[in-house]
Image 1 (cartoon, helix red, strand yellow):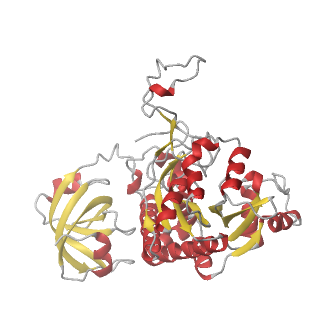
Image 2 (cartoon, rainbow, N blue to C red):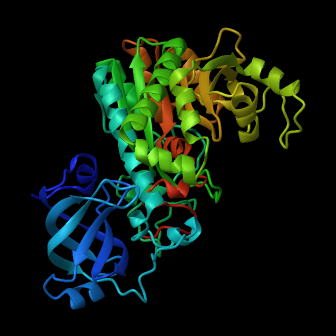
Image 3 (cartoon, one colour):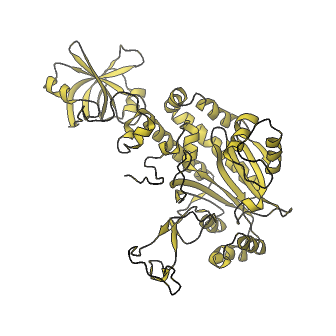
Length: 462
C-alpha cells in the first residue's frame, strides 16, 4: 500500500508492509547495510530506509542512490533503535526512478544561504526550510478559505487585467498587444491605445477591492484571494512585484465590524497553523527565529490594542527613541514607527485607526471632522503593517470630491459611483498581503523566501 511519509511517521506500526516514494536526502553505509533518509515533501522529518546487502543488485543500486535521486521502496516497518525516530523501513524491493549526479547536484548535505537558494528556484523546495515554508503557506491558504466559508462569505474571482488604479499610486504594469517596435501614435505623439487589444490603457491589477465592492453590494459578504501586482522599483526584503492578496468586503458593516473581523481572522489562521503545522513551526522557532511560537501564541491568546493615529503619534513623540523618519501629524507611519508600537511599546498587534485623509486612498470614508478617514491598519511585531482596511465612502457627493482631490477622473469610476447611486449602504473591508502573513508567521527575514517563484526588479526566472 502506497503511503505518504508524514502518515507513516505518525501512524505507521512495526510489521506493516508499505510502499513509499520520495527523494534521497542523505546516505550512509555501515556493516553490510546502507541507510537512506528519504522525503516526499509531506513532512519535515525524513523516513529512514534500511537497505540490507542481500537485496538484488545491492552494490550497483547503492552506488546510484545518491542525494537527490528519486525512488520507490517496498518493505516492512520495524522499530528503530536510533534516537529520535520511532520506526524505520526495511527495504525488500527498490525502484530507482531518477539518478542525481553527486558531483553536480547543488543541494548536498550542508547549509546553503537563502541568497544561493533563490538562484535554484527549481530545486530549493526540496530543502528543509523552504519545504516547511510552503507547507505553512498551504495551511494558511486553507485556513483563510475555511474562515470565510464558515461565515457564509462568497469567494469571488476579481479580474487580473484592469483599467482602473485602485490605489491611485500609478505603479502599475501595462498590459498591451501593441508592437513595441512600432507603437502607433496619436496626432499629439501619444500612444494610440485605440489600436490596442482593449482599445484603451490596461494594466495588471494592484487590488481586487473595487470589484469586490460590486459583489458585496449584491451578496453582502465576499472575499477575494488572488494575485496582484506592483511595478514598484524596490529591492527591499519586504516587497514583491507579484504577490497574493486576501480582501474581504462586507456590506452593512462599519469600521468597528471591520476591525473585529480582521482580528478574529488573524487569530483563526494562526491557531490553524499551530495545530496543523506544529513540526514546521517548531523548526522555524529553533532555526530561524526563537520568538516564532511565542508570537503566534501571543496573537491567538491576547486582544489587540486599538488606538487612533493621533494617539499613536503622541506615543511616538513622547518615546525616548530616535527615529530616522520624522514623527509628525499628517505624515504616514514608517515601518520603524509601526514596529516600535507593536514590538516595544505594546508587545502585541496594534490596530491604528482614523488616519489623515490626505495620506489615504479616495475610497475611505471621510470622518465628521473632515480631516481624517475611517481607516485602520493592523501592525504586527517584527514586520509592521500586515493588514490595511477601512470603512468605504458610501456618500456619492463626498466620494466624487475625494476622487477629484486625488487628481483622478470621476468618469473612469462611473460604475463605482453608480454603486452609490443605486442602493448604497455602509460597507467596509480590508486587505492582507498573503506573503507578509507567511513571512510574519515563519520568521523568515526576506519575503522572496515565502513565495515559490519571486518576482522583483530584474528577476523573473522560471
